[in-house]
Amino acid sequence: MKLPADKVNQLRTFYDERPVCVTGGAGFIGGHLCDALLSLGASIRVIDDLSNSTVEHLAGLIELEPDRVAFVHGSILDDDALAEAMRGCRTVFHLAALGSVPRSIEDPQRTWSVNATGTLRVMEAARGFGRGMQKRSTHVERVIAASSSSVYGNQPELPKVETQMPKPLSPYAASKIAGEHVLAVYAAAYGLSTVSMRFFNIFGPRQSADSAYAAVVPAFTKHYMDGEAPTIYGDGEQSRDFTFVSNAVLAMLLAGATQTRLTGQAVNVGAGSRTTVAQLASLIARECGATQLSPRFEPARTGDVKHSVADIGLAKQLLGYEPVASLEVGLAETVEWFKRSFAGR
Ligand code: NAD
Image (cartoon, rainbow, N blue to C red):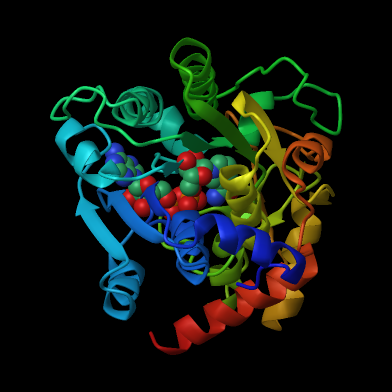
């Protein structure tokens, strides 16, 4: 992933030799964030329970940079593991969560426990009060957490602006808005610098295509590559702000480094443009050379929102964020990665 040249110096000055904790760093977005942090000179400590990822990518980073990468194999619900992961860290990127709206509909308690209670545990550890920590042993100055566009629900106003009242439609979205409130409270009550990034449909290389809860881009790509028609839930006219992962990573890095006071704000992170799921399917079919395969249609799924696109004005204003990769460029890179990885199957 290439960072924009005009931002690299600013980011390197901040991250070089900085000890940083990444929760969920073995996952899709976390893995790309770790790559970028290492390229900027940071030392990273990752905590992940590998419940939705493998250690493969991280193991490669440890082999390359054994002195700058540490891995704690554990859960954010385990205070001792969290204390170990945050030891000496000044910045925490909190991405560990159970993603997927359908999974949360099936198992709301587990989603709540990891995403909402887990975020509280992360914040307790960040202020140095987790079990297994000596009081005030923390060095953490700022926590940047991954939230989700799903918090907006089905309100008709587009684009989604942070001033709109959230209306979660799924246990996943409820757990994410709870996490945002936790971050805001730790800024207000304990003076920690915090910010929640509302990610809009992030996609890119290494995103899991295998689970029943796979996101739409890897799911469609895998189908087309296997010579099968993908399934669209609903009429295909539902739209999303599909955002290449380099944009999400850049926004997180800027949020970690900015001199702007961050006091628990929720900030949209998207590309700022809207594509229907049917259009997405045909773009991916073209990249895969599978335009002869027409999607199958199934009824819409509970909890899915109809339309979503980000207003990215606040991210621009607070963080100096501008998307660096378009949907087309991101899809080409993603499909290319899937082709290489499928060739090795
Ligand atoms: P991912 O599943 O690839 O990454 C999450 C990581 O967290 C995984 O490696 C998983 O093993 C780990 N994890 C889960 N439970 C854990 C626990 N109890 N303790 C420690 N680690 C645990 O998902 P992702 O797409 O990389 O998402 C990263 C973050 O961004 C999540 O918080 C997600 O909710 C949020 N988000 C993602 C998207 C998207 O489109 N991918 C959109 C909105 C928000």
